[in-house]
Length: 302
Figure (cartoon, rainbow, N blue to C red):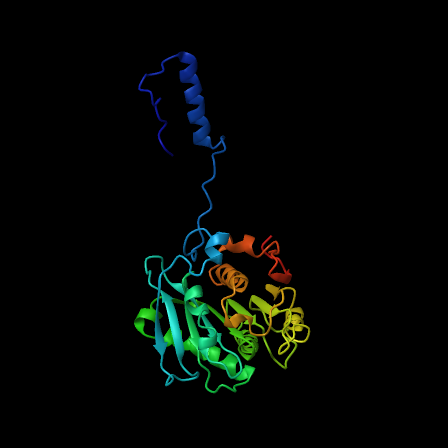
């Protein structure tokens, strides 16, 4: 208990009534009779970066400067790729996410996502697949192999920045279908973000990983009515999940910079990979804008 402080004006107060009052306050403090202001809630252990704002999340880069390096195609389990990571090491380790391109596509079609997500405090690996014709189940295994490589075999400058308990997956088209496969196979993942996902399997009732599915309203290759929507609906309501449908977007919306997608994706990763409650307001209640055709979620953050 802190000592009772004298008046700060430097004049001793010796009036008997004041002395009695001061003794009464001291006694109340000693026995806990007075309610003291509670300290502010401590920040979560994985919070990284400043308080989020709309302008920060909509900017082309987040608060962290980043570096990147190529990943050899000679690695085991996937076809190499490119890794992006924050330069800062003063705030502790970061979560990591592996992202797969779609059927016949290379990482270059999604490469804008690498530095953008990394600049918000993540290690990101954009993978090349073993062949451009790999199906979703294969892409799911390759995403998990890429995460394992990051944690176990990546260069020390990368590996030393990663918290191996905070990992996530994402992907476009068949890569998005692959991210569903990976989430189903490895429930220890902290998040998944399938983007315009394609998969012949429609039932994902086994998924427990927090999953945000992002679809395009006019997608004719993986129509939301037969892919994104039933995928979302099949994930149990007890799991954390969200469905974002972009107004007028085709199947290829992730292949150019898309601010609405990036803002929601980063918010989801920060909320569930970093357990960062500061991002709740960007997910729940449902975000609204002219770019959003529909948004649904279990809204567990309210």
